Length: 221
Image 1 (cartoon, rainbow, N blue to C red):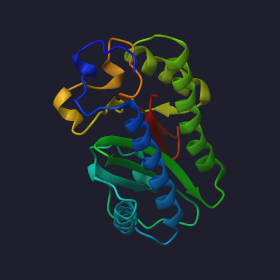
Image 2: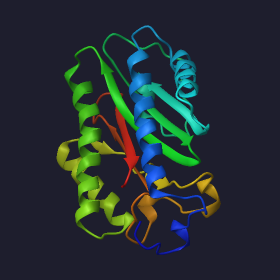
Image 3: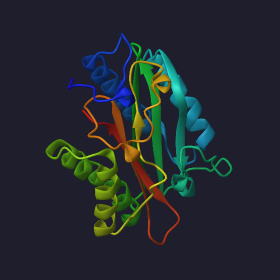
């Protein structure tokens, strides 16, 4: 990995970039498997229970942040907010999965949004969160800007795309477990260029008029 610039990017003795890549890959594998078992008629609590079973089957070390699966209007909730009730997934609906899982001592963290049915605005919202992530990721790859600048860029791009970016969600550190001892803060508050394999870029969008949103996050690597 490139040179660590500050204590905000400190890592433990076990940290290896390739193992971070492995954690990333396993987290996406888990998201794919969990998404395939979530179907209309299932409740959020049922989806979470099934998700934990799948993570155990895949051989995770442990969950390092609560497994979040949000249905419908709960897709507007931030990580720290509780879901309203225990909604049932509809035939024309939207949901996201947010996983924080330790694999081989390293923290995987990823999230994506999915839809049931054929509601064009829900489908567009899910696609927009992923597209905005890709635009910001590309900006990070091509320009040595700060984390602050990345989220300024994200907000501008979201507006251009016709969506509302939730700036209460601004990314965070990951590392060998537990990253919390390094206190890196939010990516969106970082006043230096974020190095590879250390930061999660989070994108959460809201539909400008209807009560749902979309979420997408992944490791900047």
